[in-house]
Image (tube, rainbow, N blue to C red; front, side, top):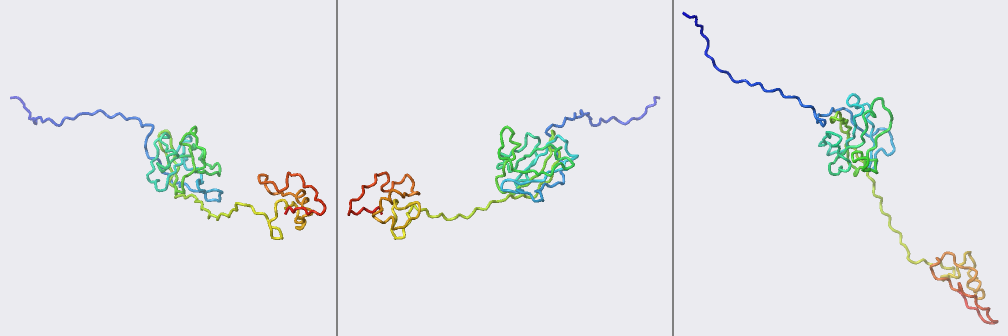
Length: 272
């Protein structure tokens, strides 16, 4: 007979389909990968400095040697400024086009400014100069809104941090600073207004009566000289007032012809 070998019955298994391998896509230029968090904390200079903190500005130490190895020399290092209670909700921009401008500080509660190339902060320390936040009072459209470093609108408090931004997005950032409070000017106490007299009074003579303008000479003269009827013409023509404005009426006798000599025995009228 035939040699028949036993074989197990055929049972079809699950159908396996080979799916095409996904093609890796290029990383977008505006990637949102988290930036490296650096331990540096921005701070106001500790040394004595004139105008270190004013009513609208404050100074910061430059972050020298902080971004070495974390950013290229041409990457931009920005300063983010935010109200202290809004720093926790601040989101790093994906690109330079998304930089929050100074003009929207009141609405967005934050902005970015003072862009510098990372090479400016490379080691070794190149200068002892500081950064001054809020010192630009002439922000112009030609320079762009992102470059504006305008005066701070209130005492704050504010927090700041540095952010290195490359062509593919954020690369490295520092920690937020401690709250910075600006100076507040004190309102001076109002001084009482001095009473102003609406009419200038003429000084009184020693005799108690007010001297008419014609009897007020430029240099002191005896009182009886002006009161003597016999020399009234001398008092009116030789001594004239020196402090009455021209707009006021002319003193008596000015611009008139001198009186005729008195006849013998007649009494000349007094000018006073």
